[in-house]
Image 1 (cartoon, rainbow, N blue to C red):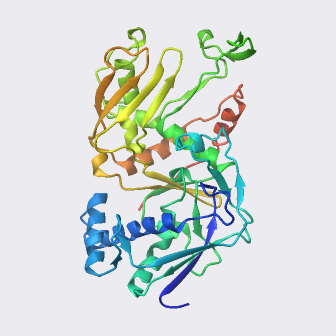
Image 2 (image 1 turned 90 degrees about the horizontal axis):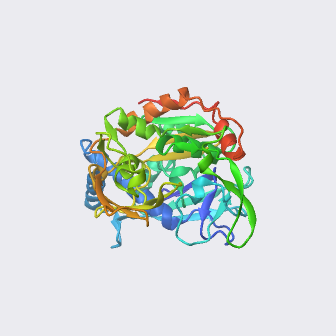
Length: 416
C-alpha cells in the first residue's frame, strides 16, 4: 500500500435506487461520492478551525478557507474540490429489481420521469465495492482515513437516501473497519433492531413521527363507472369502518405542547369551499413539517377537500430530512444532521390549486423560528416506545401487518 493510496472494502446493506441499473456492475458513482466526501471533510476542517461556529454555511465556508490556505483544493468547478482521485470497483453481478408500487419510501417523492430500479445487495460473502483514493498530498489521504467511516455513517447514496436506501459501510474484514457504535460514540443518535422488512419499519417510524397514519377502513360498495364496468370502491358516506385506526403525528403534538399550530390546520382554516372551513383555534400557525423536510406540494383527496396545496419560497425549493436512517446489518441508526439556519422563520406562500377553493387562494405562513432536533428525536423515541401500535387485521392487511411488525421494536437513545 502506497502512502499516497488508500483502499476501502465496502459492503452494501440496502437497495440502491439507480438510473443506470441496466449496466453491468452499476453501483456507487464516484461523481456522487467525491463531492459529498469533499464537503464532509471541508465541514470537519471548518469545525476544527473554529468550534464556536454552529451554522452549516459558516462552517463550510470556514473549511474552504482553511483548505485553500493549505493548498488542498484543485480545479475551478462550481463546488470546491479536494486534490485527490477516487476509483470504484464493483466486484459482483448487480441484482436489479422493479420497485414495489406499494413501497411508500420509494414512490413518495420521485417525480423525475426516469426509470429507476433497485440494485439490491447480492451474495453477502462475495459481493463488495472497493473504493480507492489516491493523492500526492499525504495530508489529504490522512484526512480521508480519519473521517471515511464517519462519513459513511452519516451518508447514504442514490435516490431516497435519507430513508435508508443506498446504505454502504466498511466491511468487517477490512483492516480499516470500525464498529458503527464506536464511530458515533461522541454523537447523539437513536437506534433500533429491525423486525421484518427494514423498509417497512422505517416507513412506519418516520410516518408516525412526521405525518401520522390514518386508515379509515371505509365500507366497500358496488358501483358502475362511466364505461359501464362494475367494481367496488370505499364509501366515506357510511363512516369509518370497524377496523379503522388513526395515529396522530408526533411532530404536531410536539409543537402543540409549545402552543404552536400546524400548517394542516392552517389550510383547513383558510382554503377550500366555506362549507368545510373550520373556525380559528387561536393558535399561532407555522409550517412545522418543514423542519423534517420541505416538499413542493401536498394533495388532498378526501370527500370534503380535493386539490393541491403548493409550498413556495423565494429562499429555498427543497430541504431534505435532517434525520438519516442508516442501515447496517440488523441495526438501524437514526442520525441527526445540522439544520441550516435559513430554514428557520422562513416565509412560504401556500397556493391552493382546486376548483373548490374560495377566493383566498394564497396565504403566507412561516416556518418555526426555533427547533431543537435532538430534543425532538429524544422525545419521539420515548413517545414511540410507549405507544400501543397494535392494530386489528383489516381489509388493508399489508398496512396493518407492517404496523404490527413494529410493536416489538424499541428505539434506543444514545446520549453524548
